Image 1 (spheres, one colour):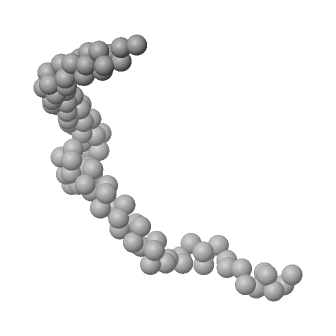
Image 2 (spheres, one colour):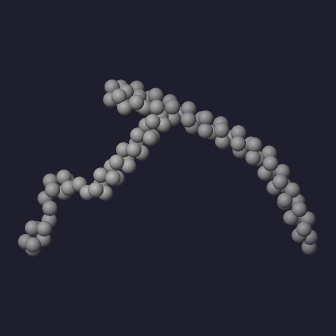
Image 3 (cartoon, helix red, strand yellow):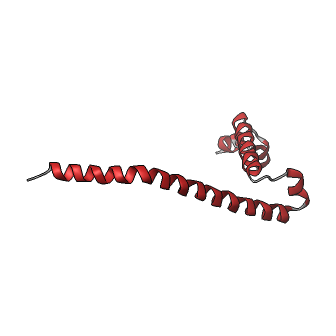
Length: 101
């Protein structure tokens, strides 16, 4: 039993033991967080100075992005529906006429 206790690392050794994989994951998470913050026009200096004000502006920007995206998607949905729905109706009519029993 003493052999297993000798090979086990202490709590501090486990905390400070950093592998290259851990550093790479941390780096990628930082880049991803930076991209998300840049998407909402968040300046890191502003975040440190006025956290809640910056987050409120980011929240407003989030809703602007969502509403603009919905407007864009509805416009293209209607544009596609102008072509697809009449073709679908014609296809249904032709298919029903070909299945005479």
